[in-house]
Image 1 (cartoon, rainbow, N blue to C red):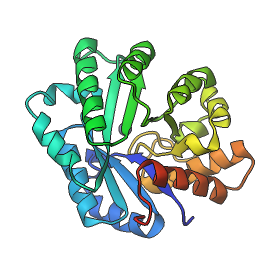
Image 2 (image 1 turned 180 degrees about the vertical axis):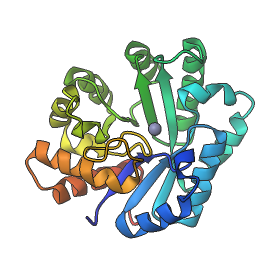
Image 3 (image 1 turned 90 degrees about the horizontal axis):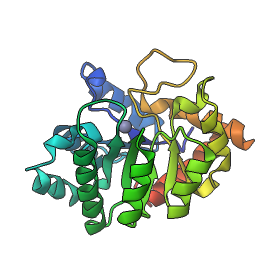
Length: 256
Ligand SMILES: [Zn+2]
């Protein structure tokens, strides 16, 4: 497929320590582009350095909900990263109340701060939400966020509607291929075709039939194929539609 764009992956993950450069070299032939998402200062720096070396890689810099204790004292370093042209979003940021760790109050403070940084730098945000829907909706409304994507969406079409009404995009992972996923395919059918992106969340969320293996950005082709099934079109066409959306969303015209 010529027009494959993975809108969310984590190639800094230790799952790629042994062969990161080989994986990237292979992707250069297979993919139109990938968006490498940082989760803390070090991973954001790594994503940025690879984006500077490879034209098909662009990055997002930010602090993931459970990494937000690292943000305090490093705000200027994060802002300096956002000034690079290869950085096309603030992410991965959000709220995750599923695991104990960083308090909801601390997560909300860090999210609010990063939402304002994104506005200041005129960048979209890549949002993670788990078990925190009400607080997420509240904070996005309070900060009038319109330019963003809800990544790895697994919710209902009613929830998707609430995000869509704010102007946000919705992104789907290999979760769409899981037999257990009931709500996500319904939501994918509901989201307007010009507001949808696809991603791998590599090395996580490996699609069927490769469950249990490490995920890589090239497997976004399987997400495209599943979306094509839902949309009643071939995989290639679904890939092209989501590619175009990613290009527009990350402002990559004439770049990838
Ligand atoms: Zn992620």
